[in-house]
Image 1: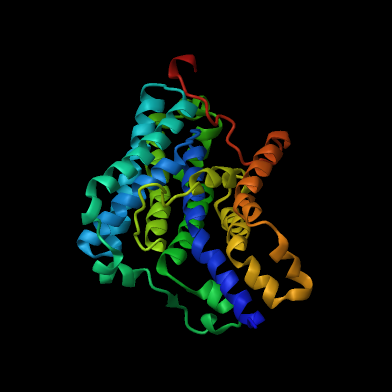
Image 2 (image 1 turned 30 degrees about the horizontal axis):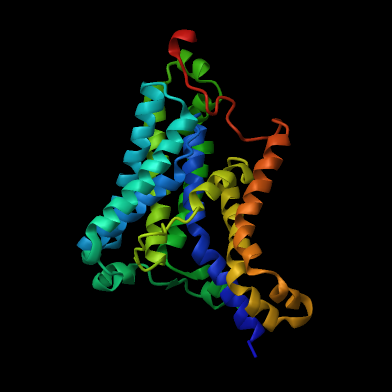
Length: 331
């Protein structure tokens, strides 16, 4: 019989382990949207960060190099999005979808092109070791929660710190307040001397770079195993876009949102174990069709999108100029 305490501990541990990439994608998209741009290319951007970060990390056998490569490669996707939508005034929805198509295509092109020479994670021991769990003294010994929250790999802690730093930047710094002004009313911000083009470019690149870190995380979590038919990102980019709405454009609430969505995403794996460990309250989980568990994260995403469409603007953190190209001549 499964030990109930052990099953619950592993369930909570994997909610965090497997779904932190959602946090990276969500926080990156929040940065982008606070600049007034709606980027639907999160899926492709994360894919680009994943494959180039992983390959660079394996070549250098370094977690730091992999992180930098993932950030830079994904940042280039953000730069391309900025060039097309800020400089050339292209439609943001179409451009974002193009970035997704381009990113996924590049992911499979590079992966299949390398073929049998694809590097295994085991060939880069320092990189693999950098993704190993790091226990925080004392806190990691707390029953259940200690292992789930304080015995994770460094990229989990980096994701939490990134969300906190982005919140601080948006709310407590002059540059962050100017960025929010750009997203709310670019004409007004322009009239007081804010360089709209520079702010958009910098934050579209930075936000996309953060998304790329989430892709790199997924590559390591999948042990770098490339499959010609499935992408490591597996729809997480689309869920991250919905999570921005769920979190009300707040990076700290994005942490909660990632865990809520992560709960449903992880439930499909641990439903049987939970039913066996807690037969009276959770025994019914074993009778739920597995197909429903697989669909749950996307069903929740759809519900969030529908709910957001009927929610009033009051109290929403959505930038007023989100998705609207800024024409200075019309100011």
